[in-house]
Image (cartoon, rainbow, N blue to C red; front, side, top):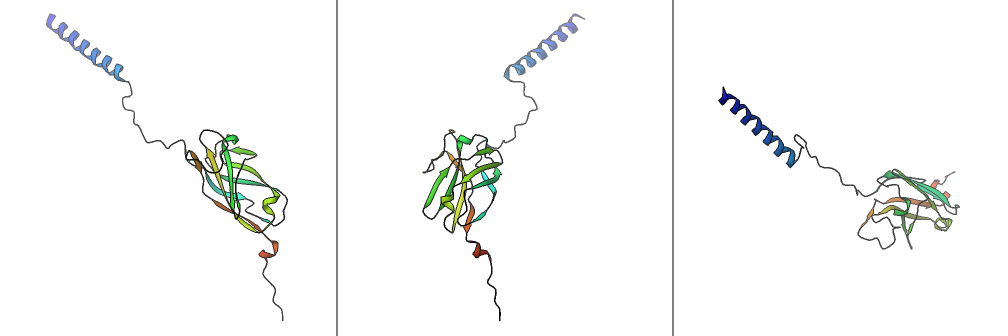
Length: 158
């Protein structure tokens, strides 16, 4: 009977020691570690509205729809590239899926195709040109300034 008690105590102490050792090295038993997408995913533009305006229009408010814009308007820049134009402009407002930007009338004086992209700066400073390596740039989408007559077909009569 004494031997049975000693075996029970030995078994209990052994089990307690194993549990204590496992508790000391970490208690994440059965936890799976799946890959997590990185936080710094570059912005992506899905569409812009309007995507075209008439030559000579006054300044316009453009809505840029997409993803991964963030919410810090001081870390976002809208890059406008075209013939003789390459500038970064700050937004009026930013939410994670929409940016609102004002386009100056001076950019709408002549027929042209601009390429619009979004730049998000990692150190949360206003992006500038040239784009630095830590800035994340989105895809480019076209924005057209057209003469209204470019949209109509000529009428041929007898």
